[in-house]
Image (cartoon, rainbow, N blue to C red; front, side):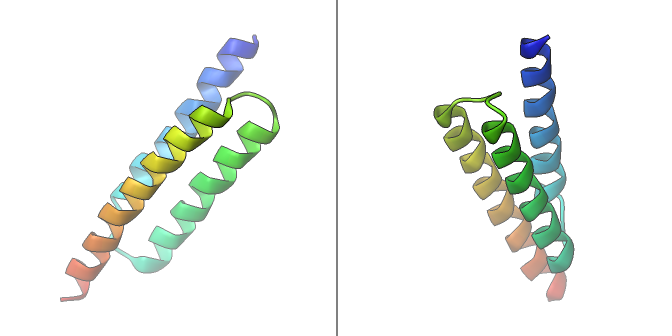
Length: 77
């Protein structure tokens, strides 16, 4: 059951990351950025993922946030 919980938790974070990368509104970008980070640290605090996985998923969040930021700037033009 623990491995299934781990996989589900990672899938949830990746779902938040995917949604973050699609945002064109800055308020929504910030909300999904915070949701993704919150979920990431919650599953780490729960002992479901390692520090290396936190770093990797954190990097994915950063890439998605950068993409969304570019889209927000583009939408303002």
